[in-house]
Length: 265
Image 1 (tube, rainbow, N blue to C red):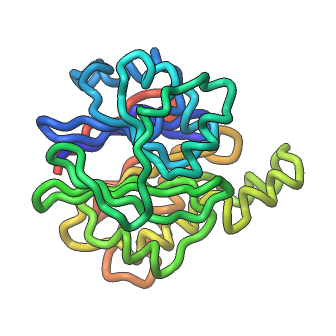
Image 2 (image 1 turned 180 degrees about the horizontal axis):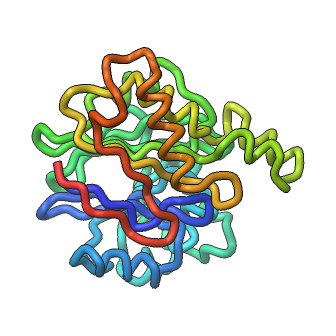
């Protein structure tokens, strides 16, 4: 199984997951052209994509969805409430109803040889989900856009070989930054986004001997930067209540505007 971040950040998100015979995208929050270019970088085209899995309806996750789904007739998997919200988003354009396939959290389904299991996340959207993938003994997950985590989140994400986890903002940068108060309050709330520190604390509960790689994703352009996210999460892991140190694992930051290396597990 392979995982690759084509783009990950507050300005747009698109993640590839797949096997030798199955290719899916998690979100399409960048232009169709950028998605195509990212796929080309890993030896694929839009025609190869078997499905687009949508986490929620915010524009940084669906901006290119209409173009891609209409151009190639790609099936869209998402919750019913999210599908309704997408169809009400004028900038995406009208998407044929027959392309939508409803999913529910904790109800696994298969796309060819890839098993997909959605999970609840806490975010200010209609019915948001993260996605876990299984292929044989390999497991991966994409979990961003969650304002908080709990024991359920931990149980869902245990045992992953590769994990793309949100590290959206530095709390101090956000608090002193130019965002209006209501937006700061939203981001810091339980239905907002994970800070660097909180991402590190969650990661402490998920690490295990066989974890291959962690990708830190969905970084805010205004309230974070890659080196800060990396150093903060690594510090939380090394100083946290767990038997590991950050240097025991490969931890990377998913870029906002360029594809990451393909992770194979």
